Length: 243
Image (cartoon, rainbow, N blue to C red; front, side):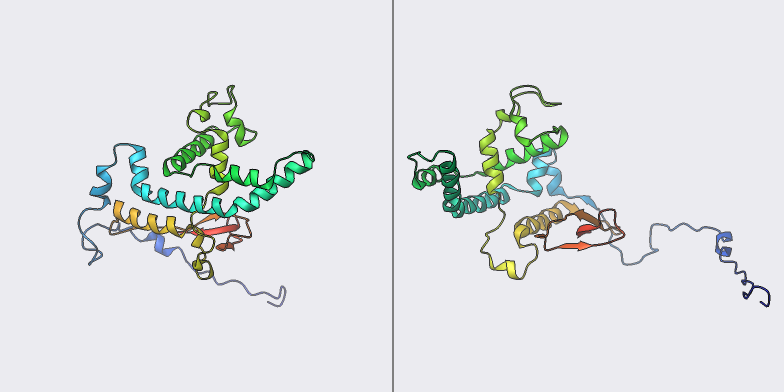
């Protein structure tokens, strides 16, 4: 102490517990009161587990896609006037002497066929195909007539035209923008999907007596994401915290 100003550390054997024999935790009555019986996939989900599509529709049923189609069509109708005005202004800049009117563009938008649930499913399928074999350029290049990466030419066009695909993507909505829940529910935009998944996942799986879960971060930098938080210890520091 006189020479260095420090006292010698007192050695504490913190590893003594490692010398004790390991006793594994056994199944049985070690945790009394736990649920007994079967756990795993439910009988209901096993009935439809023959194909990936049937499983997909079990957890995200047609009724959900019909609701999404209705909300998407409603959004398209509310945006017709605004989009017609933008298209007319753009057309006038390029063709000042054109005889087309705002009404012409508005009528063209009104004549577009409504979005159906089956089209939404095709759109999701095309997005999955893009994720499996993406190209390094624009999404629209998947409709090119020559081979592009691992997807043969013309394959996307067999299921949906390019313009129809982007029309659906442009109008995709899960809830009404005027819904009063926007003032009280942070995930009101996707509340329909969340509520459906809560019901179908509960219906499709019988939980075991012991269940571990963890947290993760769904990356998002969008300022419009009302559930976005910052966690400095995560690889993706900004996003939505999921469990």
